[in-house]
Amino acid sequence: MTSIFDLSLFLILFQIKHYLGDFQFQTGWMAANKGRYGHPSGILHAGLHGALSLPILLWFALPWELALGLALAEVVVHYHIDWAKARRVSNEAMTETDPRFWHYLGLDQAAHQLTYVALFAIVASRAA
Image 1 (cartoon, helix red, strand yellow):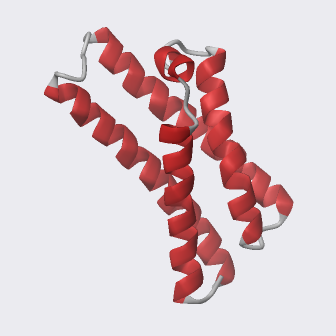
Image 2 (cartoon, rainbow, N blue to C red; image 1 turned 30 degrees about the horizontal axis):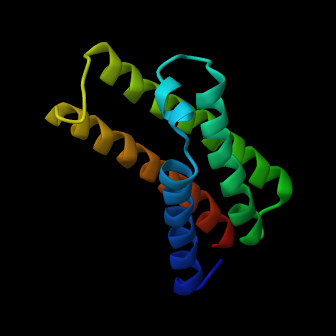
């Protein structure tokens, strides 16, 4: 990955991937149980993100072992970001009408984006 086009495409693909994983493919079951640590729905949701990331990482010519390792790391990080947000929202009985709910949702989304920046830095450093 060397051109500005390639670098931009990497970030664009991760934005699309995140939208699909968090908003199109996430079920109500997944969303409702993310605050229960170890619940299969949260693991499945985070695993979906890793599964969607893997082909992007492979497309950018990462060795499959590294791509798989980064995708699995994203699963772990994504899971814990979601769990922490869901726990906080649940513990404080926040609903969508509470401004704090939206603050935590924004923090959750920003943390996911920073994960993609970290993946981007790893991939870009390998091309340098």
